Amino acid sequence: VDLVSLRPLRSRNFALLWSAALVSNVGSWMQTVALGVLVTARTHQPGWTGLVAAAAFIPMGLLAPVGGALADRLDRRRWLILTTLAEMVFAAVLSVLAATGHDRPDVVVILAFLGGASAAIGFPAYQAMLPDLVPAKDLLGAVSLSTAQFNLGRVIGPALAGLTLIRHDYQTAFAIKAASF
Image (cartoon, rainbow, N blue to C red):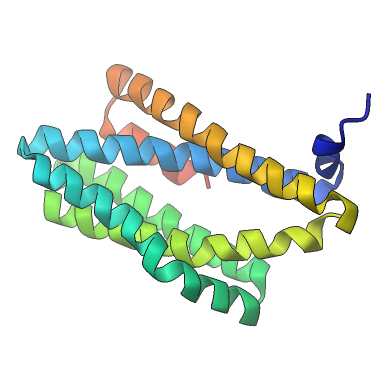
């Protein structure tokens, strides 16, 4: 059976990038949930929870156009690697801070913003790479699979975050995010 919508996965480089993006996206949603739970538990103030969520997501709206311009001017592969490494570093720092009890809400907000900014300027490179990874006839399927990957991560990530927080702790959730890259 030849499913046209899955045909882009036959392209090795697309399949590798797609599966890596899925794992990374699951880790990102795990971190999003863990950040909210962490600041709520530490402060007992819903304002901090809203602030950390805003810090993580506002950069996407503000910086994605900048990321798009950079993706058009820079080597997309290298730019994606660089921004992904930055996200990994910020997640690792969150893990260390949570493990050592130095996870102050203001620092968590700053790290959430920096991680969100890294994602915002890196994600357009991922999107712009798709036409280079699959034949033109598979581009629609590649875009559809990328959207499905993102939505699947939004389902799996929070569920895994809940299990991780029940069985382990915040630093484990952040460490999984860092390792997901």
